[in-house]
Amino acid sequence: MAQEVGQELDRSEVLQRPMPREQMKRIIYIPFDHLHRTYGALKDADPKTDLVVFVESARMTTGRNWHKERLFFLISSARHFAASLQEEGFTVEYVKAATTIDGLKTITKKHKVTEIICAEPSSFRQYEQLKDHGVSFVENDFFLTPRPLFNQWASEQKTYLMENFYRKQRTRLNILMEGKDPVGGSWNFDKDNRLPPPKKYEGPPYLEHKRDEIDAQVAKELGHTATTTWATTRKGALAQMKNFFDNHFGEFGPLEDAMTTDNWALHHSLLSPYINNNLIHPSEVIHAAMKAFHTGKVPIESAEGFIRQVIGWREYVNGMYWFLGPDYRDNNQLKATRKLLPLFSDPNATQMNCIKQTVTDINDRAWVHHIPRLMLLSNLALITGTNPQAFLDWMREVFIDASEWVMVPNVIGMGVHADGGQMMTKPYAAGGAYISRMSNYCKGCQYNPKLRTGETACPFTTLYWDFLDRHKETFAKNHRMSQQVFGLNRLSDLPELRERAQEVLKGLEKGKI
Ligand SMILES: Cc1cc2nc3c(=O)[nH]c(=O)nc-3n(C[C@H](O)[C@H](O)[C@H](O)COP(=O)(O)OP(=O)(O)OC[C@H]3O[C@@H](n4cnc5c(N)ncnc54)[C@H](O)[C@@H]3O)c2cc1C
Ligand code: SF4
Image 1 (cartoon, rainbow, N blue to C red):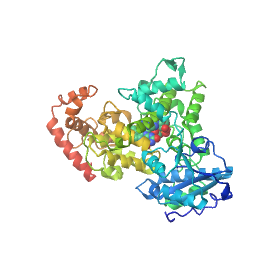
Image 2: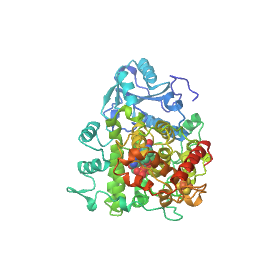
Image 3: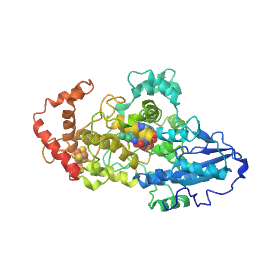
Image 4: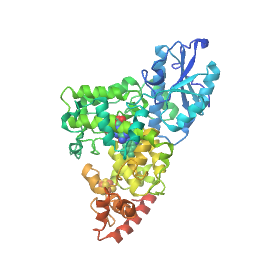
């Protein structure tokens, strides 16, 4: 970025209509993921006395190898939101600074206002930094579950099963309930929601979002050619939500685990970036989902599947992040030490069709859905013994919707089982058969998902068995894994498999497999 540290943005569209300074009583600091007018610290804000501050910190923009589409989305959304507050009559300061604290110091000095308030931040690090700087917090109400309520639930559990939390959420929030019973007679329709992709599946087109001057300015500063995939305004985010409920909701469930080269998003909502930066509050998503369900046109398996993601998984993951504490991200219970493989950043560094396609999709638009994240990327990191923190850092950098609170439990707990089973009772390790069943990737691949040894063996299949073999002592004690571990005994070719696994791991490191 060309701008100097501490320098204010030279953008008249953001800094119009300043209020007389003496009227300003307090600063409301808005992190880039608190972009909602009626939640968080802005809920009770008064344009006459509140000065609203945004800080675009160099740590956030240049500190790491962030995907430019991700930076573009976050920055442009924040600048649009800042402009909308100004239109409403607020005095807004949008500064660039080395760190958030430096930016806040600059503004405090300039306006001689010392009281700073903010909604509780969404990561441990930001929480501590702001607290140490004397910022007062108001409750973070950007989720459906207050942090103390989740802590209470978790501290009463022997195991932290998401399913138990989800049922409690359904009842507490009275969503898809008939009295005490779940609508449709079941809490879960997962068995209906595992269809493979239909052949040559196109589906309705996805929305494209027009770019404006603010977008163009942000893209220019980043040296980036932005896609038209992601909205950067509340209006655009609401249009995306409407498009999902009008055109995709009904099909969401059955195809939610499928992967196909014919259609990069299938019927996923593409709403996570907006719910995470709060252009849309999760309660607005649930309200729209229930309204669509009540038309009678959406089957229960799709409605329940989607509601589960939003009121179940999303809330559970956030709750677990705060419950498990700041050290949780450093877990490495399987002692995985491999460096990040080159294929994660370069799709040409692999011949594995599924990974090549997935990494290309990420490079194109900073997004793939939950099954490629879990069953391709995380699965590969898990069975190759890749260091969990190296993989976590990469995932944080490349996804449009990545934030610490959501990536840490999803990767460390769910993705690579680095927490020894605190969150998930068993690792999501799988061979090529699963990928072959749920996608059309294998048809275009030089490897064969059915083979575990030999030059054309699918690396997933070989490494799946090798992973079980390497960790058999650990997993034999786990009753949910014992059957899989027992399967090792039936392999007559274990010595060749171990040899092939070493060849595959070396080939992956060299970018040749
Ligand atoms: C290893 C791994 C890493 C992930 N990292 C992230 C991340 O950094 N940010 C993120 O928002 N989601 C993450 N997810 C969850 C999920 O993959 C994305 O939320 C989803 O792909 C976003 O696309 P969508 O909005 O079309 O989701 P949909 O499939 O349409 O689902 C609807 C909504 O449910 C929520 N949701 C579903 N699953 C989860 C989950 N496991 N955790 C949190 N929210 C969930 C999201 O808000 C999503 O928008 C991760 C999942 C895995 C397995
Ligand atoms: S054969 Fe294996 S590597 Fe190739 S696409 Fe299928 S699962 Fe991926």
